[in-house]
Length: 89
Image 1 (cartoon, rainbow, N blue to C red):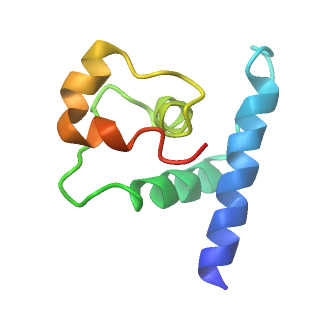
Image 2: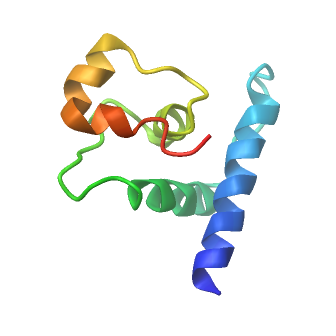
């Protein structure tokens, strides 16, 4: 049950971000669901992968889901882990 709830939460957060992408005044996803989504997506990475320090949760979620493409710098910082992106579609 915990994995199912984490998956549903992750989906809801990602779709929330999809809905507000062009609405700068819209509220972002709440902090707790966003942390669940980040933890879920981080769980898909290898243990050796390190999220770039300059990425906040929103940046990570957008890149990990392919909503924002990786830049050359992102690929350099991620190293081999860049090949895993997007983690989900």
